[in-house]
Image (cartoon, rainbow, N blue to C red; front, side, top):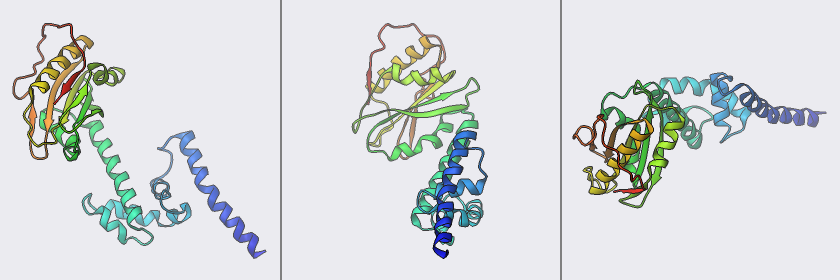
Length: 243
């Protein structure tokens, strides 16, 4: 009899996570409570039943710790180890970034820097597109191309496809210079001209093209290389290299 009770308990535990998973798929990720969400996230590195037991204390700690100290401090919560702390800290930070950029209005080039600064750590050039509403609020941020050390091949079709499908009104382009010099190359200037013409054809506004490094940035708009005025259209919108 004792063996049967133990077996039933194990079966109950194994069934609980799939039940919550089904509810999330049926009703959406907003359906579970905060503690249940924490338990689901932590179940990536521990048994769901164990995660449920510590989810209350973990949630209190998440609210109490700052972003900088959270990964280290969470390890002090009973039942949490380094892997669990890392997974939960990253999940919290990702949620924070989405929450911020969905409601953040971009009024100056420097406003976009907090959302793309992580790309300054990349050793290859990343070309990023930020799509915005008519009120210049961020809709989405995506990487369109990853190149070699100092060059990424971009095409207007790939750059503007998603912003058009998102009904964006404006776009900001951005790419990192891994070698540390934020000033544009001739290829950067030429590619920006192509993107400006293409955006105009599609009814989009290219608000800016920003080049970022670990400690500086270059804004095409601030330097008068992009304007909102209508420009004469040119025929060629072929793929170009951003360098």
